[in-house]
Each structure stands twice: as structure tokens, then as C-alpha cells.
Length: 246
View 1 (tube, one colour):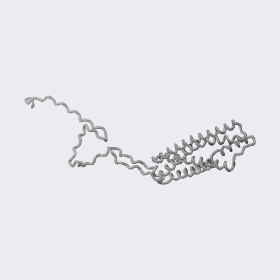
View 2 (cartoon, helix red, strand yellow):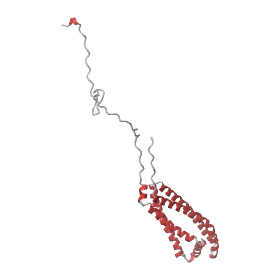
View 3 (cartoon, helix red, strand yellow):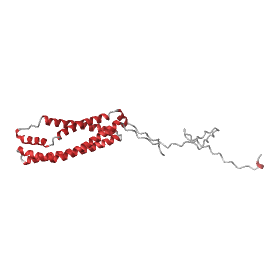
View 4 (tube, helix red, strand yellow):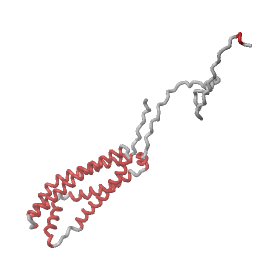
């Protein structure tokens, strides 16, 4: 049996905008991961050249260079994972899954926290450089050379991306709280009828004549036990001849 074609509900603009913004942030995360990997090679070379003037040993320089490479690779991997997560959330929002809406709010809260922390670290490094004790002066000089080894545009770009991340998650969370988005995620799909619908046709008229009553025996009543059968009749006796009758 076929049912009438049901038109899917139209996605509100708030949901489409939130999903598009998540996709844009996912592309930005992948682009940042690729850019950081491309920048690392030149950054490490510039750091080694600048670190020779600090009087640090080769082992100390190699250790900081390895830390720089490892942190960059880890950051790139995390960026790709975040991009995949944002892609999945965007697809879930477009399909109308209520769980994707809640998960997006959770991810937005974590993204706001991480963005604020990254921005605070960048501002703190510029406002108050790291200061260590006299016995760790070489380490402090090496860490200062790491910041100087990056391109001049790298720190401002990171700060701008942190601000964009904060604003992006705020906008996404706000869009998903709109009434149109709530109605889209809490809609109920119509259910098909429980059984087949009889085809339309003429209705048979009800009988107008007397209805014969069912016999009492052999048809049990729905309100009690069936009636007892009638007692058997006695067999007929022998018939006397006519001449013997008085």
C-alpha cells in the first residue's frame, strides 16, 4: 500500500547559517594545520642560527628544536580532528538531529574556553616575557629565540584566529537557541496508519427483516455456561395387536 508523499520540513535559516559557519571553521582548522607544518621547517632553521649566540650546548638546542617540531605536529593533528568533528556536527544539524544540537553547544563551550586561553597566552607572552632564574637563563634565552624565529605575521594571525574562533562559537551557539531552530529539531514525523485502509465503495444496507434467533442448544451464551442438553426420551414400547386391546 502506498502512502501520500510527505514533503520534508524546510531547514530554517538559523540552522543553515550555523552549519555553514561550522564548515567554514573546519576549513580554517585544516588550513591552519597545513600552514603550521609548512612554517615549522623555516622556523627551526632560524631558531638554530639564533640559538648559537646564546652559549647553549648542542643538546639543549636540539631538545628545544625537537619540542618545537613535536608541538607543531601535535597541534596539526588536533586541528584535523577538530575539523572532522565540526564537519560531523554540521551534517547532524542539517539532518535535524537533536543530539547534534546539544553536542554543538558542548563543543562551542569548549572552543570558547580554548580560544580564550590561547588569546591570553599570546597576549601574556608579549606583555610579560618568560623570566626564569639565573641558573636557567640559557633556557629562557632559547625560548625567547623560538618566538623570534617565527615569521613576523605568525603571531598576529594566531591572535586573529583566536578572536575569530571565539566569535564563531558564540554565533553558532546563539543561532541554535532561536525559536525557529528549536521547532526544527523538536518536530515529530507523521506516523503512517496502523492498518490498511479499506477501499471506498457502496455500503451494504442493514437487514430490515426479522432476525432469526439462534437455537439455545449448541450455541453457548457469551454471558454464562452453555445450557444443558434436553433429557433423552424413553424408547417406545411394543405395540399391542388390535385384537388384544379392550
